[in-house]
Image (tube, rainbow, N blue to C red; front, side, top):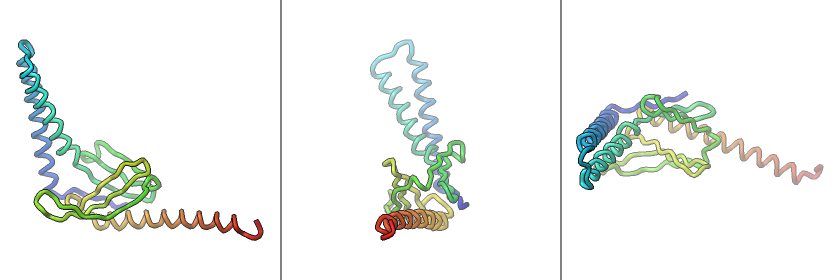
Length: 166
């Protein structure tokens, strides 16, 4: 089983963003408590702004702390150090692409894009994952083997259908 680990800089950055988000949520809730007696439209807008920004920063920060592992049946996405796990069967993967993108400061980042059969995608970037190259090779190996066995199965079905003994 190959596991990725977060690189330290992206981890610290995401923790800081998450803490900013928690602070904004706390600020929004304390404003709501303070203004509860004399609630006006401007107070509601302020409260909702702080709460929305807080949730946004938590999503961008804490909920983007992900690592991945792969075994012979599934890819496991661990969010927040394993507090939340999402398992994706390898058979659910429709296509895999290796691509590049630019981050906010113009640095090229390699990424694996896994398109699932349900229409969603998983993007794993080398920017924040240690063991990215080993993980990428392992995913390619499993996807390739799965596709080959599917081609083999379909080929056998076609040959048996057109067999003169059939």
